[in-house]
Image (cartoon, rainbow, N blue to C red):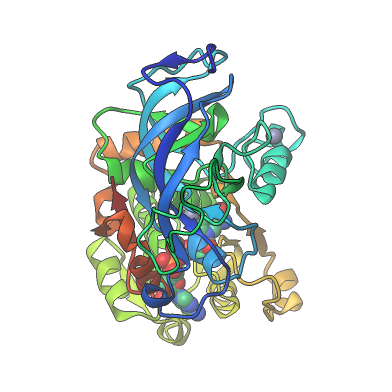
Length: 404
Ligand SMILES: NC(=O)c1ccc[n+]([C@@H]2O[C@H](COP(=O)([O-])OP(=O)(O)OC[C@H]3O[C@@H](n4cnc5c(N)ncnc54)[C@H](O)[C@@H]3O)[C@@H](O)[C@H]2O)c1
Ligand SMILES: [Zn+2]
Ligand SMILES: [Zn+2]
């Protein structure tokens, strides 16, 4: 069909993926099953696109935020944005990757042409953001399709398959939206070339996956936004996958005191094991008078943001990475900002240029300075994705990774 592509497969492909059918389902998700694993039809890659066989996909709070409605996106949507895999087929205009190459998916493509793309990562690509908000790929449109309402015979979640529609000729088809240009909770994905970064054959699949979101976001917030000096103190508030990755990167790059802050004792224990000099609850950190010149908020809650601001030293920088609900509000003192010459800065995608920064974190991992395996708190199958969302919502997981 698409004679301009090279690689083993041609024509559309039948894949299995986890589709979010509706927003704001009741908990537990294990019972309400907002994500339904089902068969879909995936178009062949366009000229500037790739077909990737997914090896692993991490569950990030930003996936949960689509499920619980904190970040409203169009449904049905095949979720997942922290994934890695092997290229199976490339479009005619892709000249620097070939079938067999391994790639990390990045959740915001950089078009390389807009004004924002000329800010060294400081601003998110405007064209990439428009495509992401529409649930489309950077080149426009959707490559995922299914019979209206899903395949009658596929899927194992509630609501799957009452048999109606069988035998009535070709079913009417509908598009399924892409999540952040990736849709990685699936056996395969078609993505824009600008949504991937190549990765070495020696990187385990789970580690490759977390490089694409947790490490790029948390690590990038440290090196690109907070930019501590080699002896500066660092505080991380919120110790999920993103905050724990920020902790690992800070530990690898600074000899100052690194303080980890979370409400969950299990997170504090892990942070100590990963090299935090101090691991404290928000209250303990404030009572102990902790202040640092580089503070990263990676919780996604306004109270955590307020904690992060209060723990920032004179002249220091608070980097906010979390994505709270749009109507969340925080209280801060403008006077303190002025009197202490402080900076508050937001950071999306680690303020990163992924093609520059992912290889940097990959090299630190290879040198043994960034034990990224420690971020993976559990491995699950695609069919357990709803249970995984429950664990994430309970704050019990660092990174759960779906292995294919
Ligand atoms: N800016 C970006 O580009 C980007 C990328 C990925 C994720 N995110 C966002 O970053 C945040 C973290 O993501 P994650 O996947 O690591 O989430 P997570 O749910 O795994 O971890 C959040 C952690 O914050 C802790 N926490 C909650 N409230 C707190 C408080 N008041 N004080 C201290 N700790 C508190 C929780 O106990 C938990 O350990 C989310 O909001 C996510 O949507 C942003
Ligand atoms: Zn993420
Ligand atoms: Zn751009």
